[in-house]
Every structure is written in C-alpha cells, then in structure tokens.
Image 1 (cartoon, rainbow, N blue to C red):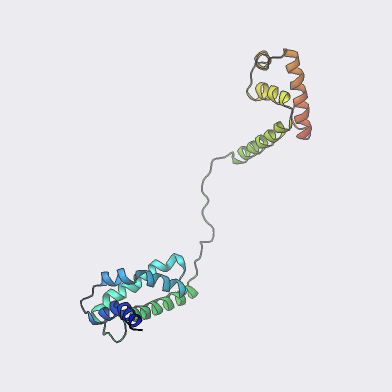
Image 2: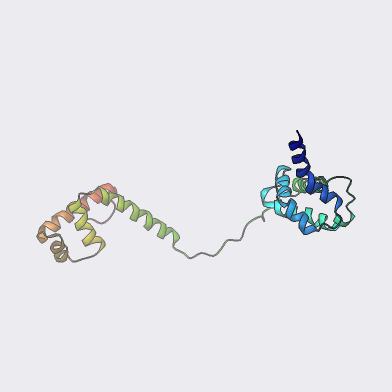
Length: 188
C-alpha cells in the first residue's frame, strides 16, 4: 500500500509543482501539454485540418493569462477549460461558416488536340492488345514492317525467312487485326 501511495504522489508532483510554481513559463506549459491539447481538441470535434490552428489559439490564451493564473485548479484543468471554450467557439463558427466555392471556376487554357491524343493512345492500347493475340511470327512481321517501318527485305533478313513468306505473314497479320478492329482501317 505504501508503494502505491508513493507512486501516486510522484505522479502528482508535476501538477503540484505547476500549481505552486508561479515562475513556470509558457514554453514549459506548451512542452508539457501540447500533445494533450491536440488530442483533446480532436476529441472535442475540431476537424483535423484545423486542430493546430485552434491549439495555437489555446496557447495564445495560456500565454496571455498564465501570469494571472490563480491556482484554484490544476494547470491541466485550467488548460482543459480553455480548450473547451475554444472548441465550442470553433464548432459554433463552423456551423455558420461553410466553405463556398466561387460560382464557376475559371478554366485554364489548354493546348488543343487532347481528344486526338487520347484517341491515339486508346487506339494504340487496343492495337497492343490485338498484337498480343497474334501468333508470334505474324506479330514480329507486323511490328517490324508497320510499326518500326523497316523495308521488307530487312524484315525478312531479321526473321531469317524468304521475303515472300514475310509478306504472307504480314497479310495474315493485317487481316487478323482488321477483323479484331471491326474492319476499320485501309484495305490492302
């Protein structure tokens, strides 16, 4: 029992010292109670975006009134009272002050052609999906000839096949791609 009462006295010492010590500075009060004030304000309904601003208001009041603190309660209880009033004022203001956006936001100038760029990207993505479905030999010829724009002689040499075989594969690849794109595109 004696150990627990000693522990209770030790736990109360900072409060007792704060109650008795008139020379305590506002920076010491801030260091000792900032975390408590922030948490309390959150629990009292101050929005997260505004907690630090309201806490600053609390500590401005503490700084102004600390020299006149009459020690009728603990320092923490006194700060709690200030928090309650500041949070109450905040909630009251928040009910009456709603953020209002201006009627129409000004449009930013943008370069033309975004729709065409978007369509081209979508078309390219669709083409890549179709290319993945092609047999490897057809895809290789199509990519090298149509996309990389290599001459067919170089395509055939790179693939190690006769030029006419490469043309046959290209024709089959084009036919498959046209079918998957729904017949869009030029015919050959």
